[in-house]
Image 1 (tube, rainbow, N blue to C red):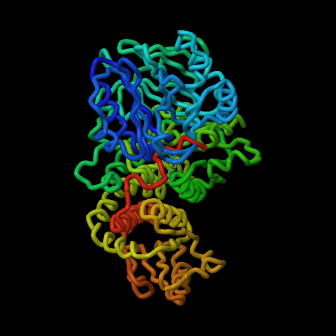
Image 2: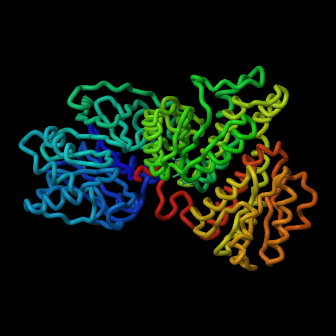
Image 3: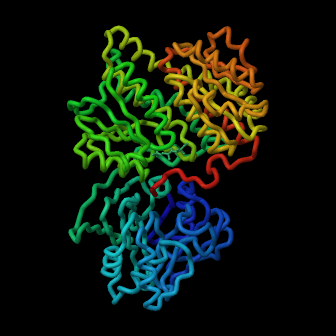
Length: 593
Ligand code: M6R
C-alpha cells in the first residue's frame, strides 16, 4: 500500500527521492518522509503530500537516502507516524511497506529493555530491533531482526557510517533499479523510470546490500542472482498527456487497450484465438479477485457458462481463506490488475496448496501474482495510475472474452462471428468517448444527490455493482448495485424522488423484465436514467433520461456500458471537487490483508 524508495550514487539524493515518491503517491498519500545520510542521518517527514514536504526541506547534498509515502494501517496519518522511523540513537532509519503481525510483542520486549517508542506504528519496532542486534555489522543485525519479524514487509534500511542501503522483501513488492554508478530501490517500476529502465524484481525472502556499484542479494543465506529486465514502456506512458486527471486519460485509452489486449492473442488472418497457455484437463473453474477485478470475474462467469458450458464459481479472494470447498480438477484463475493484492495472493497460494492449477490475469509484469501462479495471462493496459480501475477493467473483460471464446462449445460460425466482433469493439468505445458531453451532463446531475442505485440483469448485473463501486469510490456518493429483480425485496424502502436509479438496459433476454422493474421504480417517483442500446426506440417512454451506447452483440454490452459507468462518476466527482485520482482513504495497490 505504501510507497518506498531508495537511492545511492553520486547525484544529490533528495530531489531523486522526492520525484520517485511523487510517482508512487498512488500507493498511499496521507503522509510522507525521507531520510538522507550526510555526516548523520537526517529525517524529514510530515502529514500531507510529497510536494508539500518538498517545499519545506532544507537544501542537502547527500548521495544516499530513503523515502516513503504512507497509507496508514497502524496509527492515524500524522508527522509522528510518518516514515522513516529511527532507533533510539537516530542512527538507523527504516521505511517499510507491509504489516508486522507480531510488532506488539516485539515492542513490549524492547520497551522492557529500555527502548523508547514515539509512534503508534508497527514499523517503528524494526529500527529498534536492528539497533538491539547491532554489533558493528549492519547486514548481520538486519538479518537477525528479520528473523524475529512475522508478517509482510518490503523495507529499506539506512544507517550512519554505512555507504550502503539494506533491502528486504517478504510478501510486499520491491524492485531494484540498475544504473551506471548508481542504484535505486522502489515499491513499483514507475518510481524508477525517470532514471533507468533496467530493473530486478526481488523475491520473497531476498535480502540485499545495495551500493552505488553493486547489488548483492541473498536468500536463506545463499547468494542469488536475479534476472535484470528491461521495461518496455516509458514514463510518458504513465503521464497525464494533457488530460486533467489520470482517470480521464485512462478511460480514453480504452480503445487502444482493447485493441492491444486482443491483438496479443488473436490471429491477424483468421478469427482464431491462441492464448499460448499450456492446456490441462479441468472440470470446472474457480475465479478469484477483489473489488473491480471481482466484477470482471462475475462477467467471466456468465461468459464461460454461456459460451463454454463450463461450471464456474466466483469468490471474493479475501473470503476464500474461510472456504472449505473441495476443489477437484479445478482451474483456478486469479484476476488482479496490480498483481500485488495481498488477499488475492493469499487465495492463489491456498489454491496451489490444494493442488489446483492456477492462472494469474494481471497487468503488471513480474508482479507477485505472476510468481505464485503456474501461468500468467498479461492484459495490455499499460500502467494505470488513477486509484479507480478503468482501462484495466476493460482489459480484464477482454481476457475473459478471449478465454471464454477459446473454450467455446458452439458451432464454428457463431464462434467466429463473436470472435470477429472483438475487433470492432474499439471503434464502438471510441464513439462513446466522442460523445462524452452527454454523459458529463448526467454526471453533473448525479452529483447533486447523496444516494443512488444501479440496477441490471444477467451479464450486466456485475456492471451495476461496478458502476456503484466507481460512484462511491471517487465521488463519495453512496451507491448500491443490485440485480434489478432484487430491489423489491427490501431496498425499495429507500426509493424516494431523491434516489436516482441508473438502469442498465441491454437488448437481450432481460429486456422485458428490466422494463417491468423500471415501471415499479417510477411508481415510487425515483428518477431513472437508462444506459441503453442506441437501437432501442422504446426506452424513452419509460425513463427520465437515456444515455445511448452503440449496438453490439449483447454479450459484449458490458464493454460499452462500462465506459458510461466510468464517465458518469468521473463527472459527478469533478463537479463535487473530489480528489479524483487519489480518493480519500484508498490506495492503488492493496498489499495488506
Ligand atoms: O490490483 P487488483 O486488481 O487486485 O485490485 C483489486 C481492487 O483493490 C481494485 O480493483 C479496487 O477495487 C479499485 N480501486 C476499484 O476501482
